[in-house]
Length: 177
Image (cartoon, rainbow, N blue to C red; front, top):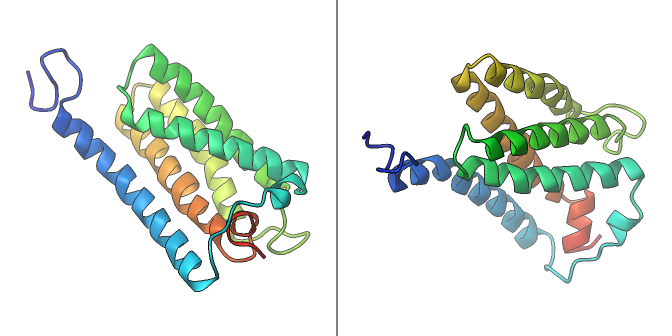
């Protein structure tokens, strides 16, 4: 029995803590960004869903897929790997990430009518998601883990934190105009 597995073949408590540390750190960074925005730009109030309800269909699809991908990705990062549920949730997560990226192609709010710097991330998701799946299918689990965890941390957590910047829809939902 190794120090990273328990006597039942499951990851030990220490291995699970080490694996979850980057998630906790990323959530802390996202929370800190939100706190800085909150402290610097008014008071938190009851969420106003009007900005979401009046948003374009592509923004609604993008937001819904991103929220689902974040929730499922968090489960994936903490759950045992290589199992049938991991594979099923992984295919679902990869599909959601592609939906998030494809919907974002049609969102041109920062520079109306034009792509913005955030679309570089769109291109990366469209490339890295299939590469991560391909790596797993070829048995290159290290590359698979790097691609997928990178997508989770940077495309969902870090990029997601920036959706709370002043003027963005989620900022308006939680902090007002």
